[in-house]
Image (cartoon, rainbow, N blue to C red; front, side):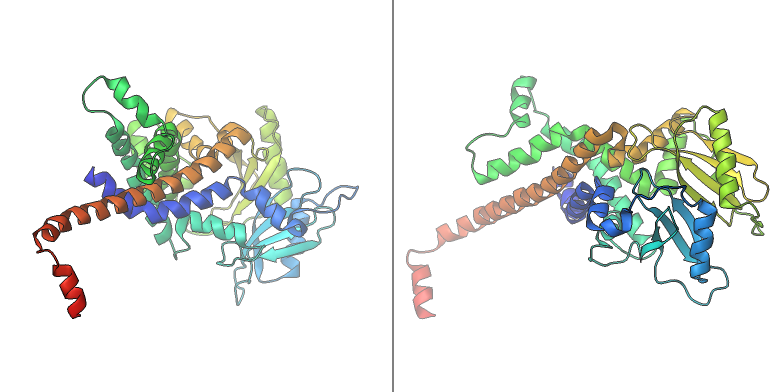
Amino acid sequence: MALHRYVGLAMAGFLIIAGLTGSLLAFQSELDAWLNPSLFHVEQVSGPAFSPSRIVERIERADPTVAVSSIVLPAAPGESVSLYVGQRPGAQKAPAYNQIFVDPADGAILGRRLRGAARLDRAHLMPFLYTLHYSLHLPGIWGSWLMGGVALAWMLDCFLGFYLTLPRGGPFWTKWRPIWRIKRGAGGYRLNLDLHRASGLWLWPVLFLIALSSVALNLNAEVFRPALSALLPTSPSIWDRPAPSVTPSVIIDWDVAVARAQAEARRRGWFDPVSLVYAARDQGLYMVRFGRKHQPGFGDSSIFVSGTNGRILFVERAGGGKAGDVVADLMFPIHTGQVAGIAGRILICIAGIVVALLSITGITIWWKKRIAQGARTRAPGMARRKPGTMKEVHVSG
């Protein structure tokens, strides 16, 4: 009981932030587009859209300090192209932005923003909440490690909290059944206690999976992947290999990489469109991702293309591979609710509110118990005082 109480108190503030932000982030793309229609929506124009290479060329020519690292292609007509950029090698200074929105029909720049900046204006609000959710905006990897450690403690505390709801002695079901309910007309303390226990029990599997997937996302290399590999067979990833000692010379452009990946996808019977293209220049390769926006299931699949000769280097089929690979592929879709489509995202939205509710009710229960214990501690001393003592002290003061 004491361990659950103090671990819960230590985590409470972090879980309130993570729960409330996570509830909003379940619909991050919709909220971001609603707040910033000029960035995400374009007038539909007839005619072919600019190719990725042509868009990249235009962006890098317009600002010599930037190099495009990835392109997010529109999922539907009327949507813009989003590009992520970084500092071009040899440039004197870094750009003041890292994301650009472009009209796919003519390559016109719709706007720019510094994604992840600690700003609360419309353009930066949702990215700000996203960064707050997983790292509290702390510098470097410290925030990610901190929230990953909180998630690990929360995952273990889920079992302790569940154990504490189990009745001691029988009849088991007769004693356990009321804990799943919220008593009507109860006082404030009983209401807090019922909300804390019942909401935690009803959503226990969801809350545990959120905690587990949080560990997987924040402490993947440090905790999750080693533990998973010890329990289940896993396949090596292309990212496991070290970067070449000499940066490869990338001569294959974006369009060729996409064409090679699409040909390989067709050969494998994939029918999803290209959703993202990422240039890993230090590795000398392109990652071409295939999938549909908010597609239920395991998420997007990827094909890796050599930037030096266009050869297919690696294929990652979402939900494929060994047992450990399947579990790893499920972590992000579970965390976002995407695994179950719109119903899953709604459930994650509700679960985020419940996480905050559990923390708030836990703090309230602890505080009320502390006040009650303090009153019981003071009561014997009060009883030993002579009648009129308190009044005399007040008058003499």
